[in-house]
Length: 117
Image (cartoon, rainbow, N blue to C red):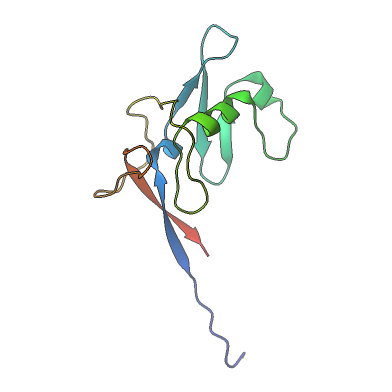
């Protein structure tokens, strides 16, 4: 037995703009727009072929970069948000939002996300 050691599970909660859990349509060179979304724990996803065939450790494409640059995506842990010129598809939030909170950057809903410390 280890004396003097205290083992605890510490969980911090962070507020994230609900746009992290919404869909974005991003027009590319194709007729139909591509769909960009973020999957918690797995990063971004895009329906374009460049993203699908990306060999980077953390996949990306110009559509994901556009969303990261122009959507709000604020969170209190590590990102102050984009310039908010790109809006998500309305009513596509895939998680429950927190009552009584609003995003300080865009004024939209917020999601409370637990994260291990």
